[in-house]
Length: 146
Image 1 (cartoon, rainbow, N blue to C red):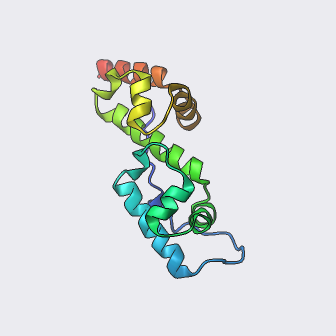
Image 2: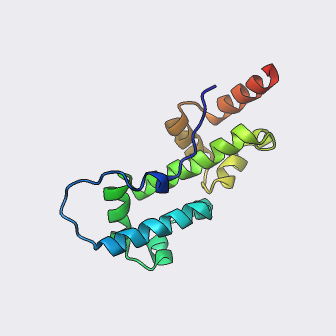
Image 3: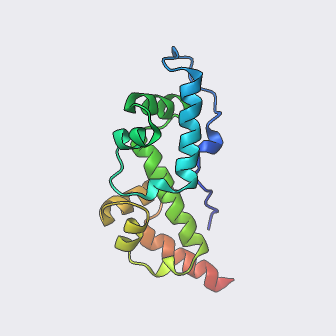
């Protein structure tokens, strides 16, 4: 089974940005990047029902400022950002902790902040290329063989 990397966007935050006209000051951009890093470290992405305006408000910024930083500096939309963090988080738990491999898919969805089993399964497949049930089955088999 392939290794799954941890998905932390703040590690790639220094990625070269597009050459579009800068609409926000470097101080605002850096402030938001720091707050995103803390958001990830504190696993706030696991909170259910997060919206772009809600997270921007947590950061003391406007939703357009947060959206700009995500889109232009991390090359990701807000929904993609949350999806990758949540699926990366649960994937790592499934790799490392046998307790999570015993959970039902509904419980895994809930654990990573997603509202439905179907949405979770779709996102898991999109990120990992395999359905959660198959991933768990393969992981258990891999552990039994070692």
